[in-house]
Amino acid sequence: MNLLLFDFDGVLVDSLDVYEKTVTDCLNAIGQPLTRGREEFLELFEGNFYQSLVDKGVDMKKFEEASVSILTQVNYAAMKPFDAIRPVLRRLKQNHPLVVISSNDTPTIREALRLYDFEGIFDDILGSDFMYSKKEKILYVIRKYSVTLQDIYYIGDTTGDIKEGKEAGVKTVGVTWGWHSKALLAASRPDYLFDTPEDLLQLN
Image (cartoon, rainbow, N blue to C red; front, side, top):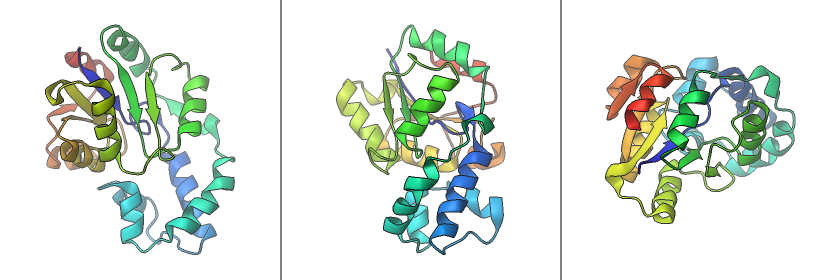
């Protein structure tokens, strides 16, 4: 049995426009805007997203307060589920526990999964409201499921995902249909680099 851990944004759903708008709105609301648009936004995910904000001098208490109302305005219709991954997940689910570990908040993830017919696939969803660090969330899941490190895979679309997976000691899978380019992901040296959702069946 493998334990398969999935990032949400960029892996399960194409939510780049929505996530970027949400973060941009939060930063604008507290007077700490991004100045270089999408390029700067994506750079925040070259490591842990929340640590990247701290490193930029963002007041996280104000950021969290601003996000409360802004998150209620999330436009789920603007997110596009990666339909090709749904049957792959259902096949993987037959043999393995599946968990979402994301920088997004759990209520947003749950609602999106409900709307896009991903319900019942995942055994756990650990969002930013659980803890900010993906590394710590992965370590939490390792303890909960008592699976050896060699049987745990973290599947993500950013270099930050790969870095935190490596820091937690699990195998890492970079997927190229998400936010960071294939070249950038390759430079982070994941254990696997997949171009299509069907490639994930290699982990079955």
